[in-house]
Length: 206
Image (cartoon, rainbow, N blue to C red; front, side, top):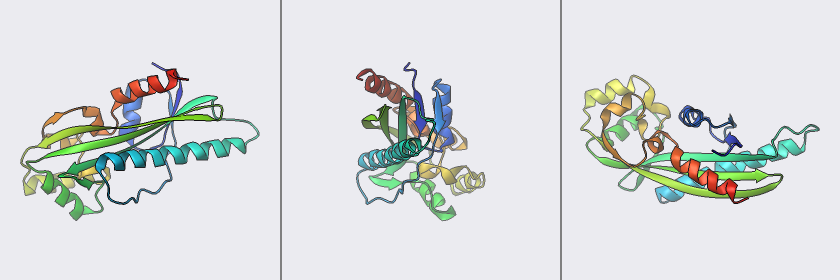
């Protein structure tokens, strides 16, 4: 595994847990970039948002470091930006706006197969030279039929409200999942195995 500092451009606890489980040395610096984009294909949407997050954090950290008398950034590091959305019949379902939005989202996913897209942007910085790589991963997720009562009970846990698609597969929302096709970690929020291989290739090229 590449021994290099990673800067995670996200405050997502799920992504932090996944990186920690994999043994990566990382710091967290959530992006300040806006997420209001025009409607586009889910794969393009998540990759663009991931790039915006990674670019914003990378540029901000370098600018702050240049202004310091004593440098804090390592000579080599990688900024990792990521974004995850759920897509049903081509319609993007992000984090719910409110209770009703979460309810309607879960109701629409009931007894259906939807797609989870995660876009990732890796920016490798050495000195002041930057090299980047972007990709996305897609996982198909099929729900059991979910009743009105089950949705109400799930919403009462408050678990859905900070999650794309209004559910967490790694939590109580996993009870709704009949099956998946693809990377489980991608549904959690980061396709860890793909990140590992893309990171190894990006750094080894330099």
